[in-house]
Amino acid sequence: MKKNKTSRRTVLKQTALAAGAPMIIPASVLGLNGKVAPSNRIVLGGIGVGNRGRKDLTAFLKQPDCQFVASADPQKERREILVRLSRHYDNMECKPYDNMGDLLARDDIDAVLITTGDRWHTTASIYAARAGKDIYCEKPCCMNMQECRELDEEILKHKRVFQAGTQRRSVSNFQLAKELADSGKLGNLKKVHAGILQLQDYLPPLPAEPEPDPSVINWDRWVGPAPMKPYNSEYCKKGRWRNHSGFYAAYRLPEWGAHTIDLCQWAAKADGTTPIEFESEGTTIRGKYANGIELVMRLSGFKNEGDWIEGIGSCPVKFEGDEGWVEAGDFERIEASDPKILKGKTFEPVAGVDPIHHARNFLDCVKSREKPVCNSTVARYGHLACFAAALSWKLGRKLTFDPVTETFPNDAEANGMLGYTRRKPYTI
Image 1 (cartoon, rainbow, N blue to C red):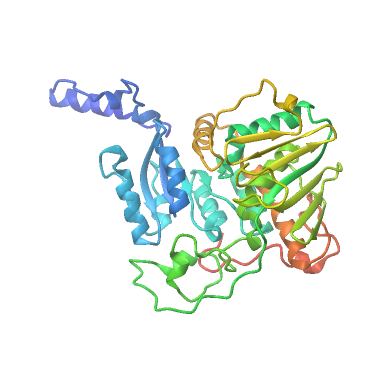
Image 2: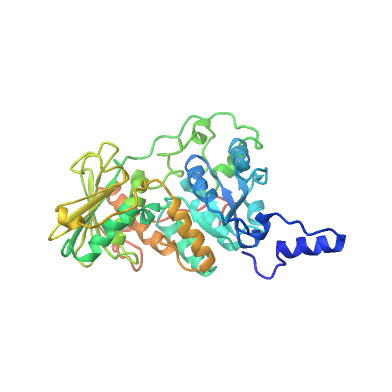
């Protein structure tokens, strides 16, 4: 993917000729037998690739035009797992780093997969953009409204390709639900429903434990731009940093809302805006767009609490018009108020958690320089809606939001919760 560089094929040819040797070059190098030549591969590095990140990485490893070469993580155990995973290539090419700066300094890396905890997503993405890398970043991509703006502005400034890990826009049953909302078969769209988890306030900090050797877990780098907390080993175990302030975004709302509110924004044709009003009513939060469409954020779960269709799956959404509705969820299902709405419609059965097509969309856009389906601007406004809704719940009152200024008019308390100060030296 790098321009103005001598191709690997040319180097091999020149070396062989200089040595007077016959030209015996592997088919994989020449791009034969279904292989992609190295000069046409996208070279990928990983930052903070843990449990969910390895699922994302698996989707990239299945792409013949992508080569994974490096992993950066402040945890030694996770670095070593990624080295072992690189045996996918029948070698040990994956270079481990304990500092993402060393990975980003490599000029042979075209793109990075960022799957750290929430606290690092925006800051690491900005570092990557400034280093000239394209970025696939897990959700939520931001910790607060301030980061929504900062992330989008930096991606646009540096002309990088950015894909938020809200992969359901690339999953067929959700795509079909959106297509039906666009088609007029539901009539005029009136409400879009997003499944969310039960919101809860942050947990108290865990008790302090002796810090490990920095070569095993570099606690300072692990915390990164977040406020420093005393080390506790539980924070570093399979996402147990969740629900802790500074490490986790917005009281659990973006955990699923980053996906479902994103899909509702998509169906409501609101990718460049947000609702202008938010109000919490028990376990439900309601938003209203300037055009009158209502965004209903209501409880969902693996057992489909409430009036979601049983067995539709996690992260359900419902698009409701004045003539009918459709509902889709992670379990490869779509349902409608009338069978006629779905007549003649088919979709590829792919689970909502599978990023395979989302990764492909990103790689295609790295090559074409087009914007992916969940680019930084899409993520900006979808995440802003998440944070505004969460603040309405936290403050316990109706909030008016201006999506142009990205502030709450005449509400000093809410405006005081828009952002934060990054901990040095992890500033931007």
